[in-house]
Length: 147
Image 1 (tube, helix red, strand yellow):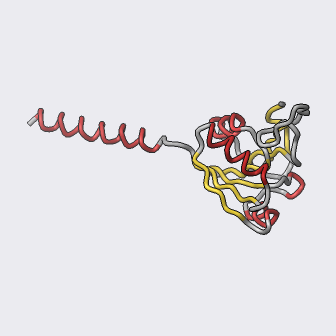
Image 2: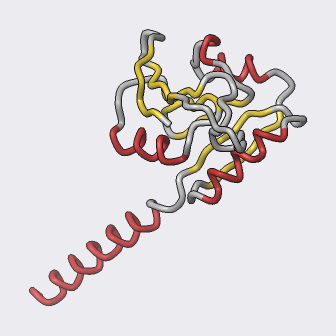
Image 3: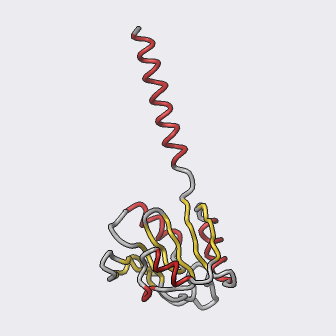
């Protein structure tokens, strides 16, 4: 009887472990962008190359999508995205998104306002320094990363 119980416990444990491993597949990102923006597509490629599962949705009104996701307009860029519970605005590097998900701060999400030259999707021979901002629940922000 003890053998059956131990075997049953082992099977349940293996199912839980394998289920957890399965659940840890690529992180999904839903991107809302204009169908006419080339740099948005390059940012999507950057995320995919960095292991994210990206679904794009072409929209006619990116600011409306941004509003629905809760990101204040003042942080706006050419595309907006949703990953987990967070909004991601603009050309935020994949490493910053991974860090956000790892640290799980109580916030709206991350933003790289405007279209910073040298950010993912906005590569240029003369990149400019820029910051990724952590947008707090009250709409204020602080520097999350410097690039």
